[in-house]
Length: 278
View 1 (cartoon, one colour):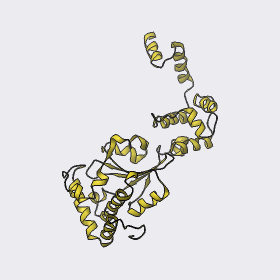
View 2 (cartoon, rainbow, N blue to C red):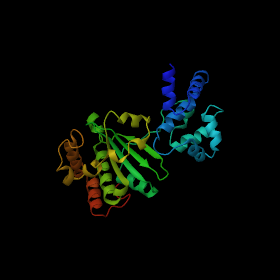
View 3 (tube, rainbow, N blue to C red):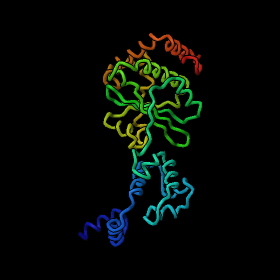
View 4 (cartoon, one colour):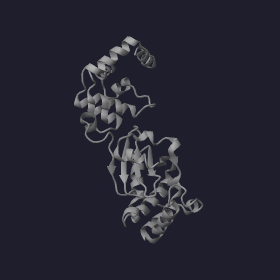
């Protein structure tokens, strides 16, 4: 037993006595659940320089006071917890009461060129389009603001036609949105592909987006899937099963719809104007 305690203490870079005291404190004075949830929240931002001192500064409190509460000496007020949740982009009800999931995920039913323009006009930092690698897809629209906060939207884009007979007009509008953003705001548009097993974490809001928008997960599908010159040279299953057929059908839908066809032509000619093709 002594050797085990010594190994644990060494790994945590503290004395055996301090390790024994810490163990007894955990047994007889367990941390409040809200602090356990706060630990989970901060852990989502590993590697981004978040410390208790930085958190204290972000909510306008003294570092020592926050550190004392996190050490079990006192408690946060609901107002302070609301500020902490806002600072990290988390749901306040989850942090305070364990109600729902950690991060908010809203619902939207489409994403058009006009929608993209409105976000660009607001001065957002980036627009992330995150798609599952599964054939039926799951697609998230993620807006990254300049203050580092994210807005996450689940959609029925790319998967609706597999499950029922609608959605092709929305997919064609989305193709034009990708085209318009690529043409005029490529530096703000980022595509990502995720393994289907990881997508539920984002859809439910149990993980923060920064874990999934790193460069190693970036994908060019957002630039390719609407452009025949690109997807026409790629394998039928280049990004996901049925990719080529899906792209070709969406291209046909754009050409069959007079409004969407005219909008695509205007985008490619550099003559697109917001609100003109509603």
